[in-house]
Image (cartoon, rainbow over all chains, first blue to last red; front, side, top):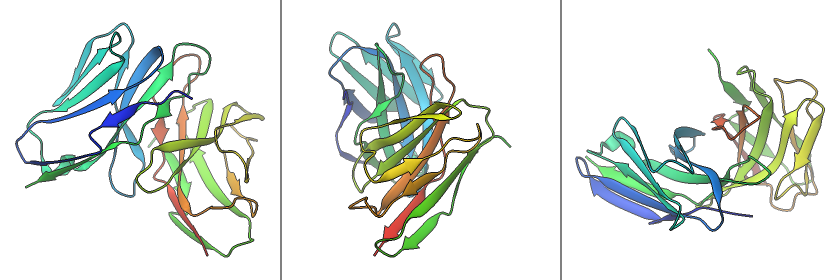
Amino acid sequence: SQQGEEDPQALSIQEGENATMNCSYKTSINNLQWYRQNSGRGLVHLILIRSNEREKHSGRLRVTLDTSKKSSSLLITASRAADTASYFCATVGSRGSYIPTFGRGTSLIVHP
Amino acid sequence: DGGITQSPKYLFRKEGQNVTLSCEQNLNHDAMYWYRQDPGQGLRLIYYSQIVNDFQKGDIAEGYSVSREKKESFPLTVTSAQKNPTAFYLCASSSTGGAYEQYFGPGTRLTVT
């Protein structure tokens, strides 16, 4: 089944720096979603970007989508210690099932 | 408050016992899902249901069973046939009829010894 693959697997930065995570996928999509998971908790939806969109913003989050390269990026600007979490991309295929397929995630640590 | 709940948060069982994990939502969502998450891994789909009294196998359904008798509830039974049941189990729900985001419960950590 189709799966997004996040890169890097782990990222460690200082508070105030920007954090960029990437997601690559293999087949055409209807949309791509980013989720956040704090340790031991459920996932929280951050942003959904549709295949005909190129960029979306939500607060300090910026998501881009390049369907020609089959890739997406999540940028967190001016990061805070509270942004420490795992971030997952999930792809929804353009045909058939609307169920998202999740990647393995990027573990982000923001040092105060 | 609208949301999705899972209970219990932690569950311990002996090998050979079946165990049922609870998932309830009051978001009026038609679709509900069960995922399994192992350390350092993504989420793997166990079962999903898009309507009451109907459910479909996901990628790793072997050793699990579900029921969907009510819109609000989607319990998951981990049977003794599941070879490696120790994991973090996540329930989610969403609207149907298009590609929508999922809402997740807080998860149940199951340990089988």
